[in-house]
Length: 441
Image (cartoon, rainbow, N blue to C red; front, side, top):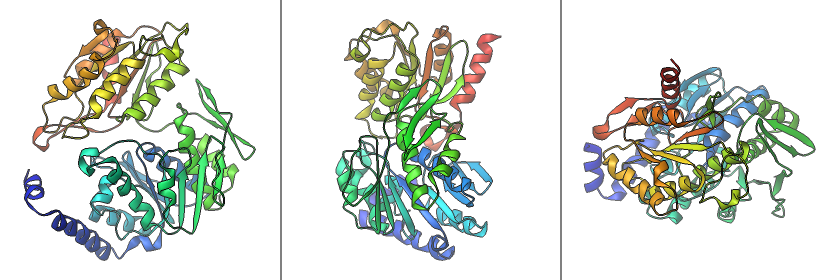
């Protein structure tokens, strides 16, 4: 509360100087640890955590001791612990301390998830990034930054600060912006056979989306990933580009990625029989739609009135979704959009509480509902249950054999954040298991 009052009355330039000064102090106190590491920064709207995980596996598979930091976990060599901060990119002192610990442990690489909010608060300052990676960009944190352009510019600051290697998704419509920044080397990745003149390009095509995972070729080598979602091909390509830039062979990249069993809270299958239950972190419209598309395609699920792309489908199994939206004034514009997307793909919808912070959770749900109400979705298949555990329990009771349940918004996050800065211990995956066990007993 005190922090919010200070932000309200202090001039923006003073707040910025405070963040900059704290970053400088942290770097001095921990002796500028990034200068003794090869630091890789991964930014974008979606896929950052997965790229960090994939990259870490490739580097470790090549024999390099590696530290990594994402919204999922912290890792230094073989030691890892859950990120319980409810903050993807830690504060400046914590971040510099983490890098110092990586140096002290003998790590050669540090792979960091870099957020626009972190950049806005100068958490990236005085970190010597050698490689910057851009995954994709879609509207997010608009209220915080003021506009999509400013959000994009914040992401671009990582590339401005990195003079070594820039790795960019060529299939994103914002590619040209990230190519403007000078660097020693540029590498692009694509599934559409795009090229960028002198830019090194890593391409794939003939992607096979299978119920068991993904199959695709790169440089004559066939990759078989035990991961769902065509979007994971892009995440894999980004990590492969990093590996190749460090002279790690395509065979070693393939070996490391094919061992990956899955990313916690990212399209994670929690229940397999008699119906499937997945938990995913998706909280943006773009990510949510890709998750729904993956499940409807993979499991031949029943057509909905609002999903004409599946007209003629013969599947009778349903897609049942649980979703909410974050509070705290964050991106209110997207709440109706999330509801609209759920109505397009799902046969039954349960909206529920997520992280309301100091907002009225009923108002958040009302905004999601407005997006559903503006479609042809049959309201007989719509449920509004504020208590998230109760919502999950109700969803499991609705599911029949061969149906698919998808619970989005939190993934493996360990808290629900409510009014007054309080945190309630939570894990969607654990709650699913507990409620499923009650149902079966």
